[in-house]
Image 1 (cartoon, rainbow, N blue to C red):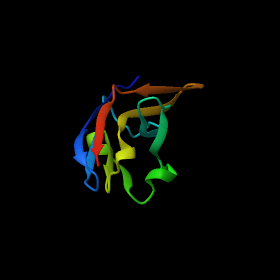
Image 2: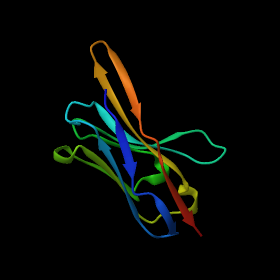
Image 3: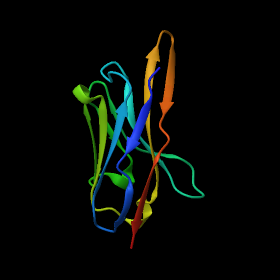
Image 4: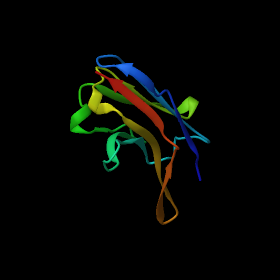
Length: 119
């Protein structure tokens, strides 16, 4: 198992930046994929970005060119740098870890961190 804890959310104005951090309870070297989802009020949870253990990055179209996901294996941490924030980026952002253990994949989620972007 792995526990993940997010931090870095807050209230910003449109056009500003935030960096979210997701710290894992153990080494992330062997975790297949880590990433971020978000959920806005009244909407379904959606993928924002993820990064594989091999370094492959994947982004939602809505954030391409504005958000950057990165990882620091030495700190067991995944980051989401969010630039040029828009009001529509307002949501609770959740970190997750997707790991193969034996024959099965498991998903582990954080509690979420609120990001609010005012216009």
